[in-house]
Image 1 (cartoon, rainbow, N blue to C red):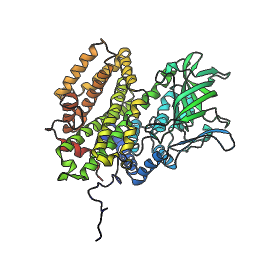
Image 2 (image 1 turned 180 degrees about the vertical axis):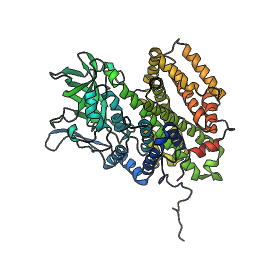
Image 3 (image 1 turned 90 degrees about the vertical axis):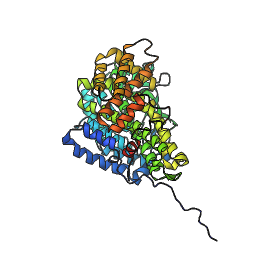
Image 4 (image 1 turned 45 degrees about the horizontal axis):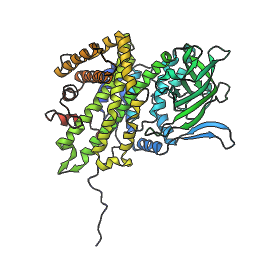
Length: 545
């Protein structure tokens, strides 16, 4: 008698064929509140088009292929000539090319550009996060180059271009669009860039130098040019290093190896050697950190946006799975305990999105008050949001059970990616110390931060109490460095609470304040007070196909 043993039942359909932007209510609302009305329709159309592609089977396949076929280094050609070339799978170029042509390196020169770009970055990098690295650095190089008007005039139109030229290295004058990388860290110093030993020797021509040294982490080595730090006679200085010189000759840029990383495997991170490598000074000698700091701040914001994207995708996958998977006599999403877990993760995701988009909006406003606000809010957000990414992603994977532990689900890739943004551009302690530095040196920053959180005063008693406690902590400077993480965590939570109280649905704001600020929360996800509107929170986070 014939039997059937492979009939598939009770397996959720894949989350595919949907608009990633339109399905994200929190992101939609953020775009609506932060963009002027006259830009809104155009921005929605752009983001919906991008979201539809991001949710397609084709784009998801690109993401899988780019990670299954990581970049490969070719130091020499078949004849023994040094070429220092990195080969990428075609899927990587499709992802990166689509991002560039959709404006994800173009924020600085168009109205509402930072909000539009941040929303697009949050949508598109859900397909695959690794190619976000060159996008971020290309975008972030603009403010550093603006310290030298001549360099900005040459490079900025190509950095913000929506033309993707691929991986072919040619003189910058022959290209309509370029990508930038960055090389700051060295093996003896890491985040302590003032310990750098790469030397910069001046040439006769003003602003020209040759560099000699080693960079321990140089991201996106296939890029057209790099901003690097080196020790000039006047101290640590910022330099622009092109891969190809104006006469068409290759600059000396020896890629020693590609890093074998935990995640982010589609992206090439390298070690490089400079040996009398030609470079152009950016800014003044001895002011390298000050010159490059705006680039660092912009990439730190992208760490926040990127973590928000990972959390959003993880939560969307978990909710989607629970909406279809039957267990113990019903659908998982209707089970009170699973609903609590999903709602708890959804709160974390929405709070991250609200904060990331508020920071992007501050860049668009570009007032003295907003710049002061960013000085504290960016490192505080970078510290907290990136640290929340890994536990959210791990919990979301667990919601899928054994299916989530299998590579085909995509969840392991999200989990491997999740710690990256907390490390890149300065790990947790660096961010916490940066907040302390701003508190001590820039009183306007604290005023701007307190004014922002104070806009929600009186709306929720738990938020009011948290603000009062924060003020008490800020007034006590005894042992401030040892408790810096506690302080910065509190600052980020109070800021998120203020944003949600003002802008999120009451159910979301109530649950966030009760758990994150009011203390009615356990030490794992799924420990929200059962009296809250958990079903409404979960439904809000669901991506419906």
